[in-house]
Length: 276
Length: 328
Image 1 (cartoon, rainbow over the protein chains, first blue to last red):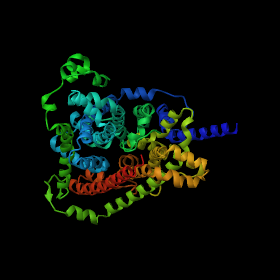
Image 2: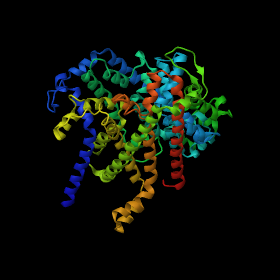
Image 3: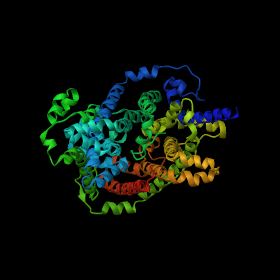
Image 4: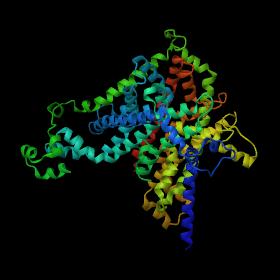
């Protein structure tokens, strides 16, 4: 009986910790359902009559649908391209180990470790010189490159876990190289593919700086709309910002709810495996 | 899986090709001599990545290194002028750069330190949470700060820190009876920014701690339980030898990420008030895209690149250590 109570208390503490971490997000979601007067009220209102006016207002904004569409289109296509390219490269690194594999893997990792503010300068110079700014392909392919290092690292780890005997068996029995690649190895690294897909999607979905610099009116994604909206001249339109932020955070939230077991591998570059 | 059952049944190439149809059969028809007989198959696999690499990394990198030797401003409209190592000398003598480096160091030190301590404590707290009702939702709530973009969390916190109607100030007035302009005050800006970073990334250290604790073999823990080893020693001799690699990887990753911090601070304070929260990333961004001094910023970018390479080497060193150590 005593242990049951201790257990219950322990669980209560865990839930409290989780909720405390989530509180700031709750505050924004609440703000999205408040009228402007409720939002600016002093003292802050905890109880209020919710309104959806902010969301209908969002629909009327010219930049909402375009940034939502850009976010979806650019992030999914970039990640799909990146994963196809990375799968081939990871297979090559894992099986053939060409000279310079370690060095290339090191370089790929370095790309992700460089502060974005540093790499945005040369990318900006290059994009202005080539005239690729605010071009769907320019931005999308940049994000594909942005996603490649992580995907290669994570997929190489998973392909290393598939015994080369599978490849040998497939080849000896008359399968072609493409057959081995796509029908033998690919199905076995599905968890790696899912983890790479989900986490690159989140990273691209969240990316702000490059989109701000090399994007333009036609390629603006949600984070940039959020920031420009919140830095507007002559007072910030807080209800708009809160409503947009609420819409923005639905996909990442769902992603970690449904793909929680990939969270660890996703946040550590595929270097730490295991479940939490 | 068709490929595996057929491994045992097929006798020759021709029967194999005839006996199967469907997607597998069609894919086998993709047998292309130029792929299957080529000595350059590995190179073909690598080609797409190398093209991406050349276009988006090698060219910009060379551009950046080259530009760092020039005096090039987008404002004056004059063509780049070669000044050799002038930019680097200027960087070395620049008060702003050293100040920014100092602030970055303070930021990294406090954020990583507090996140590690807090994350490890909470991680140990969450160790026995497997039977928590609604565990998945609770962990989603707990881990969500780290998958939200800094651009959005910065926005949240500007609303929360807002001096007139923000909830943070409501609380300070309630408790201390004083109003604090968190983001506008020279003393409070850095702690306020740090607090947001700690809120965002402590969950990451919790995640890492859970993974590290999970890597300790169950048998050894049970042996310690049977021996009634006191908890401090249990951590010292049973948990730590297994957990330290993952913890170290986590700490290095956090150090790298917090060295990179830019969009969070940009959204919260834009480096202000004055330059009290101006870390290296912000300096770089402002010089490049508000001051448009491309040569000078390229030089600073080269320096940060070197720092990133150093960090990456440390990360890989620990990773290799772990693999050689054989700790799963």
